Image (cartoon, rainbow, N blue to C red; front, side, top):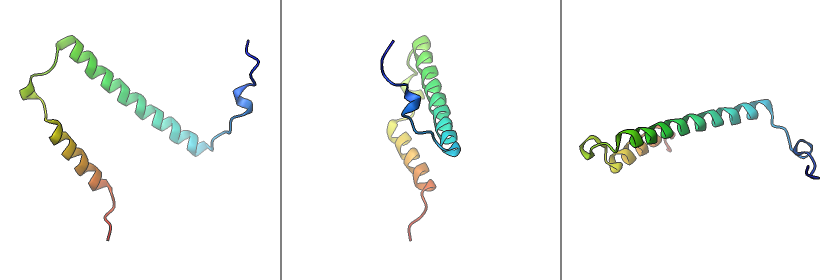
Length: 76
């Protein structure tokens, strides 16, 4: 066994709201990872999609930037 002190002795506990926010972030991150893993498994099983069936990355980027701009409050 290690001679190091227990981590619980040195950690600062989070407020309940902060702990809930961290758990929510972890759940979103886990869901995203599961989604990406499913996509990779599909590619492994079925191969890459045809180029004609794909969306160019420039279009995806522009759509994402438009979503971000819509979420941002307007500056006067």
